[in-house]
Image 1 (cartoon, one colour):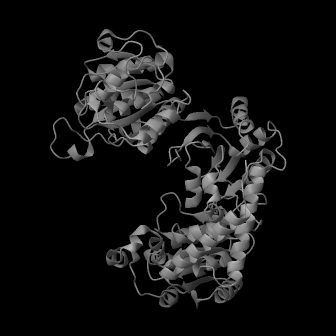
Image 2 (cartoon, helix red, strand yellow; image 1 turned 90 degrees about the vertical axis):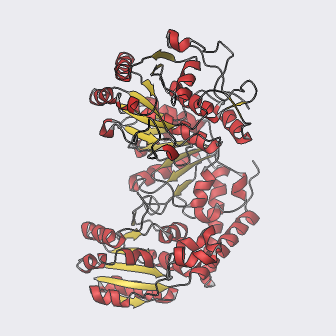
Image 3 (cartoon, rainbow, N blue to C red; image 1 turned 90 degrees about the horizontal axis):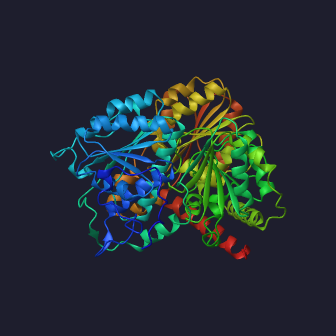
Length: 621
């Protein structure tokens, strides 16, 4: 397998003890072959970790002796860009690192073994927190199977420093997996950026299994070699972070240069990306750069104006989009609802850029390469003037054509009565929400169906989803609270299990002054599980996942004082929703369906749309 390139020696001479046994030029580096075999995964893991910290600006490493931290100590000593000093006393080591950080302004790195060694760092970590001094704390640990099992020199190191750290993560035990290696360097890069940007200590707890010494290991998978080949392409940190409440000249030119260098780009607006101002800025920027704008149902952009695409969950399932990919994505908001979109973006060759006003890490695929922590709207408007217009972009035309075909296929299916009843009911109900109203969607199938099937409307309809932890908790109460505070007519779309989970929320809904319509999709269980592979295991699926309950909700509506209508057909759904909004007050509309039929209808439509896109659209460049 290939090895990362040698780094120029920097940061001053090494301490004598750390230098002993360190290789000269041309010696071992992360991932390099060992005499007699490959490096152990511990060697690779620790070397990547220290090398990423070096890429992020760390130059000084303070090591205290210990066995469990051997991979980290050896990796630091063998990295030619790091100055290593050795300290027997961990408390002294931590304050030594604190002084180094204060003197240089960069993040010094602390390394210790497991157990009470890590506790001795605490006073300096507290001082670094209050003194706003960047510090990276690496505490080696036993792997999970040795914790709380009586293993020697093992304490609870999870969140050891409490609120004194700006960021903490308990890393997984090392594995020879490209996905985990990518996650490692992404996490380390984020930690370093946080220490520097938020001026304080960060803590990475690093478990290792034996062997701890840098001995020869078994052959490594080809995917690991591929990971190093990708990493070797440049010497930048995995993640670059640019901060500023308003985009400065450096941020504007940095993003403009990326856009000028990549003709095939996408703008992706995930949940809670912004509102009308961002929608206008994204659409104008996309039109000038030739970048399609894909807007999630909960983005705040989808219904805020023209110029965005919303049928991506359908057309990205075509085989065509397995063969083509953007060169760059500009992403805002949370993780997109659409799984096909997430899979489409999970390509190693895509340069993924995030625009956000906060420092939260939104990168579950560990693919983000640059994060601009500033106003996305202001940055897009500023960059647009630096980019030459790409008129009649064939890349943008490809997505526009796929969108038209998908919408036509959905319309044809609706005309023939072949749409999944639950998806069709949600889309039709959203169409009927009065102008200025809001929609609240459950995080299971309702948000997915709305994302795929809701039709465009440009009146600024507001869509809300509890997408932070994506649970089904408290949905009726959340929607009632939103409707009350906004004083707008509201539609809540949720499944039967979510309604059962928050039945008492109907009591709060009863007293609302504006129209409030609860559309419950009752398929007698957890409908979303029917789309998962576990559905093929009939002996366990129904009792453990399908969870049929046999309930209907007319009596619940009566108990809590809501109007009620049963609507098993799309025509009846439309009639019931119209009447409910016209009458005012709170209403519950129950749409009954069959889980297996719902899955079949979805898959048939997905196949039909994908086939039409593949038949009618091609990409020849």
